[in-house]
Image (cartoon, rainbow, N blue to C red; front, side):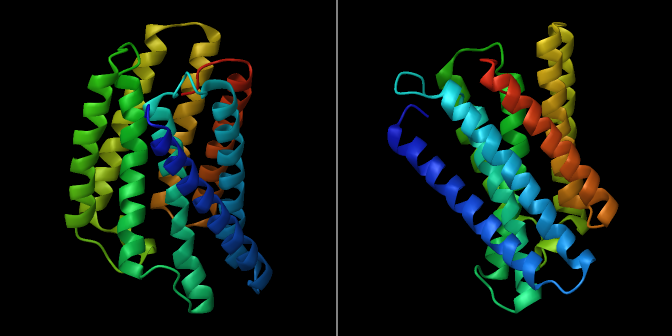
Length: 246
């Protein structure tokens, strides 16, 4: 991530994801004729706003010309933003318009979900390792493997049915569980209050993302979004206090 072009590309993609997600969600909220139909759009807005806040805090305090930032954190924020493109399926159902071909959107969301958990897992594994070359190789090789899985695993034509299929769900669950376990180990490695709070906040975001991705009921979406937003706000506050994110 030492390349300015790569950082610019990441920020550009993340900004586009934010704008598309917010724009579609606001339109969906306005057009929806019943309250239950607007739940997914409202939840998406909440998660995107939380991501915007934590992203701005991180780039403000931890990224500069001389400091490229943490590779895993930057990629986590990017892919967490891209997972919100699942809202395109709700938009298509609501209007009949397709911004992305359904199959492309399905593969994009699968890849983003996998990479989001893989990035946060990588952060925990390399937390005590300052070898940038090893981290880059880990993400390059792992990212290639994740891309292969995302393109070859069986998938429906609608994002809403992806995680009802066994193979994608198993991969997602394994990555999620490994990420949580890795951060629990990080908690045990340092019992300072700020460190524990940071890892707990990250776990809240991980679990919240999983609930929102896998389950479609009002209760799970609400709980998952609340966990994700609260975790993101905690990390934002700690980052603005010069703490390292994630």
